Amino acid sequence: MSSVRPLVTVVRAGRHRYSAGLQLQQRLAKSNQILNPPAEFRNYLVLQEHEPVYTVGLRTKDYTVKDEYRLRRLGADFHRTDRGGMITFHGPGQLVAYPILHLGQFKPSIRWYVATLERMVVEACHQMGIRGAKATKDTGIWVADNKICAIGIHGSRYVTTHGIALNCCTDLRWFEHIVPCGIQGKGVTSLSKELGRHFPVQEASGALLTSFAKVFECRLQEQATHPANPSKIG
Image (tube, rainbow, N blue to C red; front, side):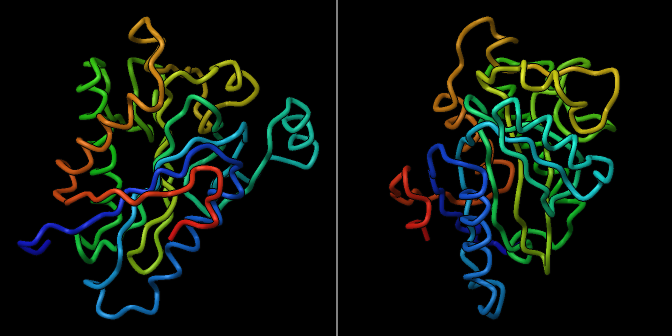
């Protein structure tokens, strides 16, 4: 990393369907691909919520059309993605953060990036009073045997997409219909459940941004957006 801290533009995209969020991050990543050298790449951190959706990653091969139909009947969308990891749920009350970064401005290592994402979320959880939050051998951030934050990323030519999903005030009953991230015998939790009070996404966003700037050693700038129309962002 250079002595000048990388600049990351924060995009507050609001709440929308998963397909809209996917198109947004793909567009932001691709709009930078013609830039050379990497130092000119414009980094983004997209914050959003999704309408109910189950997503599966590259490691998930066993979800059939029948399984997809079963989950859709619950009232959720279903998407197969190019991120790492297995099946998870996204929905209202969950803070989804997609860092679109060129690691050439940070450290050109996917392993470093995932470890730093984990450290960033743990730091944010500690700020919010979840002192037991930690990274383990299993992907994501955990409080005892319950996952509070899922992590699934994609990297191409050191440009990152996808990211993290932190349960704030999520309806955890959605997770009862799947084996989250393919890990048997463990559960899920949320900031609200752990702290014993309603903990909205907006409140968690502040701690996440503070932690992101600190752990990734970067500068953050806000970009004004129209939350209801992600297509106008960028």
